[in-house]
Length: 333
Ligand SMILES: [Mn+2]
Image 1 (cartoon, helix red, strand yellow):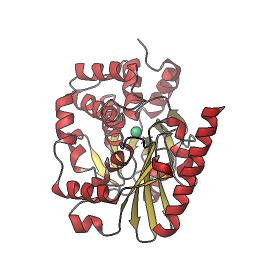
Image 2 (cartoon, protein in one colour; image 1 turned 90 degrees about the vertical axis):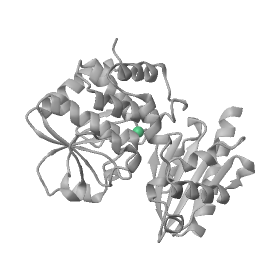
Image 3 (cartoon, helix red, strand yellow; image 1 turned 120 degrees about the horizontal axis):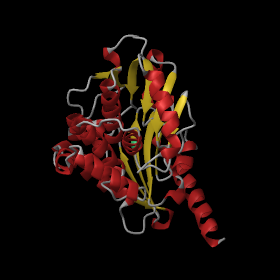
């Protein structure tokens, strides 16, 4: 059984290129389960081959996914000075996703493992499989294809990455390969119960209050096909939540019956951050986000935009209106 035969030779060449080098496995800002899970597993697999690898993130590992790290050497950007390591990126659509300060430390990207449609191939060795649900899925398949041992910590990390990026095995990207690989990871020590408990049964009161506020802010646009919620500046302090508590909120906007696109807008001083989620890849959230300097997947994308909420909101609704019109035209033709 081979999961990613088309990448096997190039993956071996990449591994050979890392042998004897010191490696930094780098994830993106505001890391999620797929990012951290992929970093943990890749770092451990490289270390098992005698490679001096460590994982580095621009932001702290969120509370609920800390359990994935185990005894993996995992650092935050500011804990490290320039150390001449070879940079390998996971789950980053572009080098900027890891932040400008990371680029100062690691200007050259040796390799990148990813599944974002907006990834243009910024590394020397690019492994970007946009048909995959998660970077953790790509890595699990690569490791199994190459016969590399996956220990229990890595199995849990990869399983959790797949679980979170598939929306708990619900999204359209949830393929037969996803389930087969998940089964292989269970056989190597991953616990679905542990992942479910840590991710979904440990909410903070602040998170639920943030959710309450977000639900209260929801408004329907585009004849009920778009639902948008807003987190105003200062809300995190007001309810006692942290930035990482926004994870999953946008799914509530999309979950309304009849809604094709859900959005979360976060107001910050001078900057608007937005997360866009569509019911179907046909809506191309990555290209809507790109109109505001963002990117991501066809059904899940994000952006950071310089400006005020009052400038941004009508432009976003207009972009959604245009996109819905294009999709309607496609389905008529
Ligand atoms: Mn991912």
